[in-house]
Image (cartoon, rainbow, N blue to C red):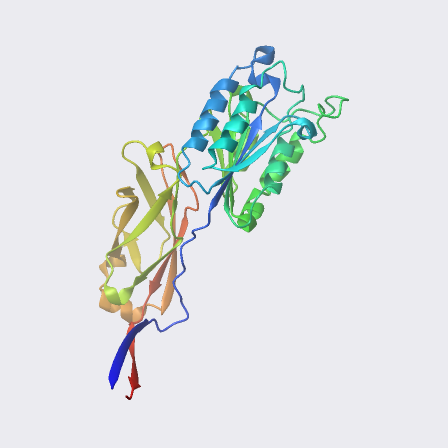
Amino acid sequence: MFKIILSILLILCHFIGLGQNFKKEQRIYMLDITKSMWGLNDSENIFNEVKNTLYKGIEDIKDPETIVKIIPFQATYTYLKLDRWTFKAGDRDSFLQAKKTIDNYSIENVPGGYTDIYSALETAKKNIDSDRVNYIFLLTDGNQSPIPSASKKTSKIDFSEDDLKTSLGNWCDFSNKSESHLFYVMLSKAALNKPIVNIIEKQCNAYSVEGTNMNIAFIKPYSNNIKVNLHDDPNNFEIELNANNWDYIKGQTFLKINLKNNSIFEVDENNIKVENNKIVVRLKTKNNETFEALRKNSPIESVIPLTLSTDNNLKILNPDINLVVRNNKERVLTLEFVENE
C-alpha cells in the first residue's frame, strides 16, 4: 500500500488570480514622406534624422518575434504607388530590404502628395492585430492639409482636420477593444498643434510626442490587479514593471502613486524609486487602525483603485491598477489517495 498526499491551496471565494498578459507585440510605423520632410518651402530638412531614429528603434526591439510594419504616407491615395513592409524584428534580410528603399527616397523621387494624417491613422487601425499588443507610431512633420488640395488622385486630400480630430476623439473606445497604443509624433515645430494635443491628452492609451526621437521610453505594469490579504498583515506590495527598452530609461526614475481615498489603507510614500524593474509600495492602515480591527470591520473583498504617474520624460502605459484587498483566511485542503496492493 502506498499513500500520496496532495495539498492544494484553496481561496474561499470566486476570485481567481489573473494571469499576466504575455501577448506578443506589433509596431506600426506610419512614416510621413511628404516633400517638406526634405526642407521644401523652408521647412525643416529632417528626413535623414527621422529615418535613422526609426532604424535604431527597430534594431533596439528585444523580442525577435515582434511584428514590424513600416507604411509610408502622403495624401489620401498615395498608398496606391508606395511600398510598405511587414517583417519580424529578427528578420534582418527583410529589414535591410525596407531600408534600401527608404534610403533611396529623396525630394526628387517621392510623389508630390499633400499630407493626409487622418488616412494614415485609419490605415494604421486597419493593420491592427487583435492577437498582439499594438503600438502605432504616427510620424509627421506637418498638419492635415486642407481640402480641396489637388485634382490628381494620388496627390489630393479627401478628409479634413475635423475628420482627424473626430478619429482621435474616439481613440479610447477603439484602443480598449484592440489593445492598441498610439504615439502621435510631431517631428517638427510646424507639426505642433495644440488642439490635437488637447484631444490626445483626454484619450486613454494615446500620447503626443514632440521632436524627431520617436524612440521614447515607456513602461507598464505587468499586471493591473494586485492582491493583498488582511490576514497577512500586509505592510507593502510590489508592482513589477515592463519597459520597451530599459536602456532608454536613464538615471533615477521615480513613479508617483495616487491611491484613491478609502477606509483601509494609505501609502506611506507617494514618490517611489524604480529599482530592479519594480517599485515597492509601503502601506499604512487608515487612522493607524489595527489589522485585527480591519479584519473585523472590512468586507470580504475591497477594490481600491490606484494610478501611476511620473514627472520624468517617460510614458506610462496602462497606469490604472486595482489593489484587491481580501479579508478571508486561506484554507488548505488535503486530498488523500489510497491504493491497495
